[in-house]
Image (cartoon, rainbow, N blue to C red; front, side, top):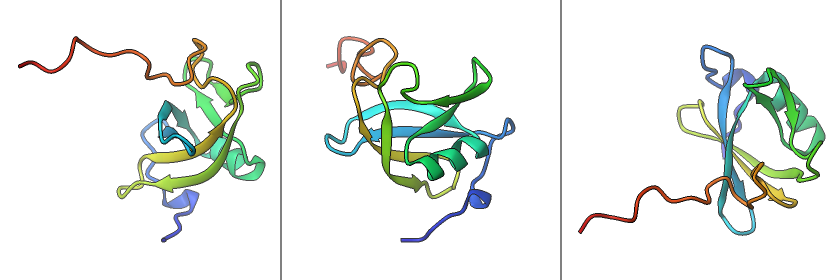
Length: 113
């Protein structure tokens, strides 16, 4: 598998890349967050996920306040190098609502017949 450096990522105009977070064990998508270069440098160094909070405009180490830490097992780069997939071991809930995944609600009643 090809390895991509931080310099090889395609950052958006704000210097960020979206990170899709997936549970290694269940395969469930847990959340989507944003990362900048510094958050990814810390993620790589610490072995746990660190993001950039767009609302607070600061680094956000997942679990520092909630205790719901994400230890990454694999960080994958998409084909355009502008989205990351973080495969993690999730401790507790991923969502700030207390749900295991941020994707716990359905849009609409289902497919039209």
